[in-house]
Length: 308
Image (tube, rainbow, N blue to C red; front, side, top):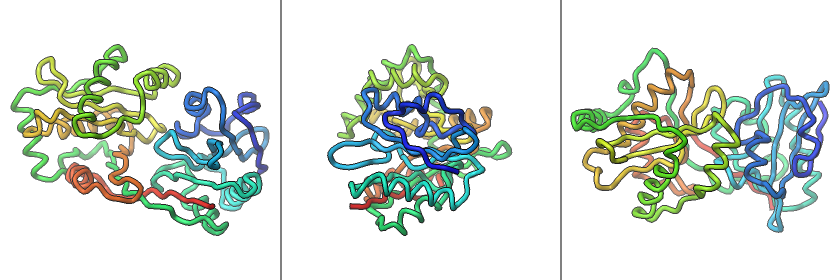
């Protein structure tokens, strides 16, 4: 395989693909995040087809893969092997010419990410771990209910929500503004900033049709919990922008939302729900970690590597 370099995606639109990259490494996602350019891409290609890709945003502070998504790193076909990955990593280092480099790697359980090969190649080249975030996920099985993995306390909360008559539903795109306002209000109440605007979210939803879904729990007409999901691949569903009304803390309606989201993921043939990080730059948010753990979340890790 050979490594090719592209500036702002120019020329990549003409390439054939040997695989479907994870959403966050797809050209649709990167083009949406960087409409004015400001990024570079490296590919592994063979027989006229792209077999692996990694993107970096570029500014005066250095190269970052990727600052505007949950993670960056490599997305690759099954044909890519360890020597190919080392070839790609070395090409990145040569082209960067001493610029500071940062790579936010995904949870290692993701398929199509070359596992630990890319990470090992970077470490051998002098990269160090800037921080390691706690990552939690739920394995989806068609034979098993999520209730089998949930803590008894969460099962009691679920029963309480069901007894109160709360309803779980998938909402249409037309309700995005309403649900975004709810999420924004909940985050403001908790002093948690939102990292995406309604305009950008709406644009992402339209430009990457079929990748986003919206789920809520309602008390009659009132939204009391919500989240947006992102289809990262055929196997992985990413749990994004969760929020719940503080006025309903005694019920914990997010328990009901995740329980029913799991059932939706079962029917849709996902194998993993990525619950996201429970830490910020390595500092664990214990309350969030414990909640995800009690929902059946399995602990993993995602690493940020840097070279100065």
